[in-house]
Amino acid sequence: QVQLVESGGGLVQPGGSLRLSCAASGFTLDYYAIGWFRQAPVKEREEVSCIDSSGVGSGSTDYANSVKGRFTISRDNAKNTVYLQMNFLKPEDTAVYYCASRRRGTSCLTSVQYWGQGTQVTVSS
Image 1 (tube, rainbow, N blue to C red):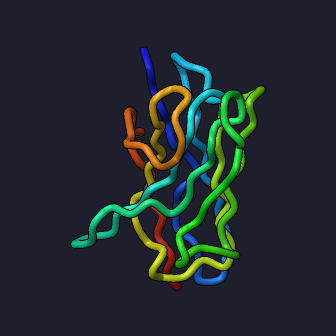
Image 2 (cartoon, rainbow, N blue to C red):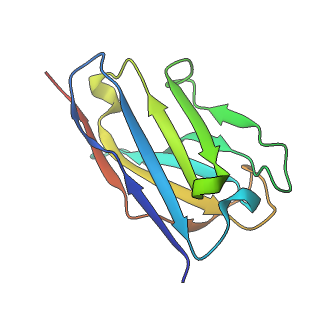
């Protein structure tokens, strides 16, 4: 059974850091482009970062302008996990964060096939 499980969310002060994890089961992440999305109350879900597959793709990364220079996406194929390191967090980063995979062998430009359940990130003093 295919499953994506996020962890690492929590409450952090402005300027702080968190690292989110997205652990996969039922498939090998190496062959999939993985994105991190977020959704704040009364806002649409937005993709903040994506990493292309390293098995069949370039492994390249992309970021939304709002997080560029503060967030870093990476993957550990041995652990079948993708991470989102978030630094210099701002109150406007508060949202539920989801990881999601595209179809096998496709790029970050394609539609999502699987979603995780989400993890809450709250940035507040």
